Length: 267
Image (cartoon, rainbow, N blue to C red; front, side, top):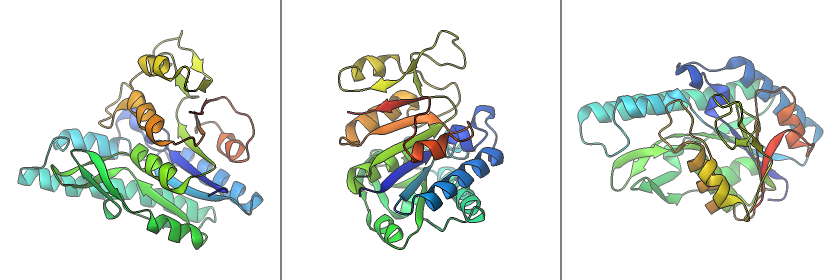
């Protein structure tokens, strides 16, 4: 879809992930929603599919209720319910912010479109996304627990949704908003010598994967290295850009193709 851009609002930017708090970062969410609304208003042909990371709303609950390696007990089943309610809350808060900014959306729960086996996707229904886009809506899906043929339920990260949408919808590009400027040689929050990697391509991918740092906060879906590996496998030539969603104006500039400080990926 030549006018489609897939965007991810990372959990590190729209929630209080670094503080491990079950709270939305409402200032950033409002800012991002307004910038997205402005871009859609200025670019009439632009279509957007939106994926939300859920930060502690998902990751902390998955650890608390031991949901990562199979569901066997009543406590775990209750944990799945609690986790999915929390993840749905994030997706609906994003939809609410976009509605306030004047953007019409369609929230699509991940457990309605994705099936996994051993934490790997075996089925993903793309039809609800195509239908929403055809109706002029912005489809929204959050990372969440989904049915799993081996484990009963397992976590599906927002990055998995990004990869599926990139593979099946063939967007113009993928934009991944986080709380730092892109991919670094080390964690920039703790290492002052960390250097931003401006471009990732086939020639330097393996080297970058070795250096990609893991976040210090709880993340059960693979950290930055996991994000890169999934993207590398499923982008299928779709260019991607990882950028700082906290910085005012970044999202709108990225949507209009303007240069910002970021990591660009073309594999």
